[in-house]
Image (cartoon, rainbow, N blue to C red; front, side, top):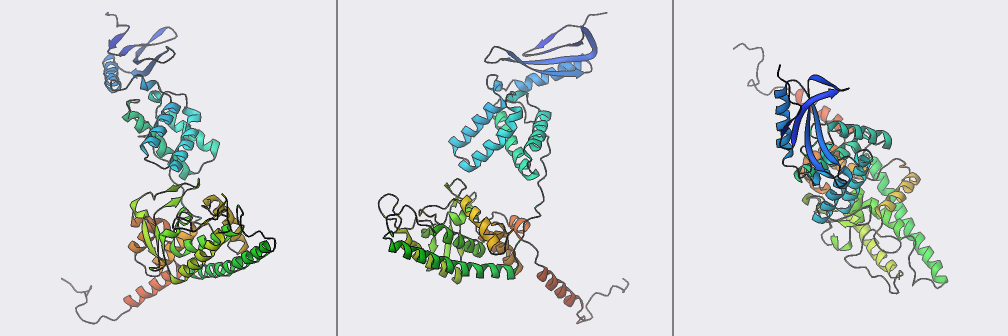
Length: 438
């Protein structure tokens, strides 16, 4: 009987019988692909166990040799953590994502790196990624929606590794993404609730102006009107103005905080949205071209804005952070902090969390003002393309799926309308007679 070869070599691959406890395992073969040595001189290999004939093992070996011949052996020594750093640096240098987005990517990949960090990118497989994601979800308590986003970023990282010849295949390609959570907590205000909120804003805005003037009168008695580093009360009034804008236009929190006076046209009754303020107080352009838009604004809201502009201009003259008074220009933010600069969106949300409880809307999320604008417009006759454009969506489906909530009164009107149509008496004999035989 012919003796089986102990080892067959095919380029940087080899096939040999599998041995366990010193004994050769029948019809079982160890296939190895040599990836060279790492920086410490340790030889790295990809190993597969093939159960079957020697011919099948040879076929697997030759296939792996073909796949790995395009891999950059030096780059393939990189760990998951090092590839993450390289990918994020590439994104920063190419300016393909905002600093906020890259920071978020870095956070999510950092979670995965806790379990994959020291593993070589070329050796990570589907099971490794699935195991890491399970551990991340359990350890961090992340929602399915967040895990869906984390998975998408991880998949993009491996795609980068494949494109850079660091890996043969993307292990995420055959993984089903985590299903996003259904959004059940979003709501929109009814017409009555929205009108009540607006009337409360009117009341509290007037009260805030009065309180501010009273406070400044006391400052005048102490000869302390000018030369201050900040003027308390400006951010509070700004908060009310921001909520009024979001309710009237459906703009996002960052868009309201990023609005400047140069983008407000009182003559035309319009506001141009062309930038947003991030949670890190960085000004950024909208994600898509659809985000850049000009909106008509109702006369009442524009009147309140005009009053605020005049009031703000006088108040800014009292702020002298660098020895000279601030002057309102087209670049001055509409929504300002007490020192006359950008109002941190996070601080605006913190203010809103306290304010909403004081006015009887304890659970109303700021983004639900946007939902309210979309729902009321669609529910009372505005066409979907107009609402889509006002919200800055690139697709009408997003407007309908995520921001349009059913209005019960409209559903009753729809039922009544259909009933009236179906109950009409046929006007002519040309109406189809279903009982007539052919």
